[in-house]
Image (cartoon, rainbow, N blue to C red; front, side, top):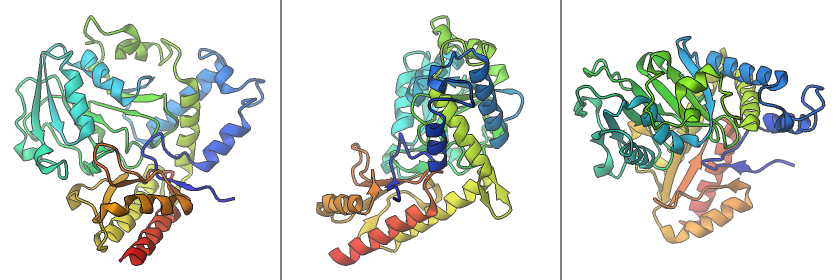
Length: 369
């Protein structure tokens, strides 16, 4: 029986191959007589799969050797506190506010940094565009600059990371890449730290990924809990406290799945990027050529992962969602703060799923024209 297509923004769809392998190994991982959820996190078996997951992530995302890969807890929301606890040095920090998540981030940082500066904001556009980096009013001596490189709720994505050096700033760039990690390459030459919850593109909820440049370690505020001190976590190979072992395991399986993906001569993340571009183009074209649906985000910064759209006649929202469920198109209701619809088309969503959604959208429009 074909599974429904799950357009949830997170926790999100996981590749069927990964779920099947996890199910097959639930009671006995590789003949050791126990499942991953039962293992000691410091035992030989778990350490081997954790180290493999870190190595696979480093290879797939081309993470340079001078960056540490940390597996932590708390999700992206907790990192809004953990980042300033580690990097602010109790000084000033800069934020570019492009949607709900970067807005939450700057509000949380105010508890730990002596000064938080919103150097650019897209709020006046209703978060439908990105402010031009040339207009950012960067602070002198900021400890870091934070962006959310893909805003899950508003559907805005940085298709190119800002070059802070070219803008005259030596501040490290911090990116929240929760909702598009592993969907495209990362220019690590422009990044000081990247963080994200795994539950959108990499695995189940519970695991938080942090990729941090080594020179940024060792500056945690005295009030920073030891389990959140990046230097302590790095020294202990992410085993200072009991990590989210199941999340690490499933993420490791997902990384192996990513490594097997092919699009022509491309493999891994490069193959997924091509696939994601095709999926996004298909859906945005259906919206833009419609008389019933509308996407309000500027074309040059539309997200490839999260596509919000609205029915011009919103009295038909419930009928649209009911019809979608009948066709196995799930979790299309927009975030409560903005309304409308949202299709999250992460790595695990096949092109066939997007095509099924587009076919339904066109059928619904014809029926209700």
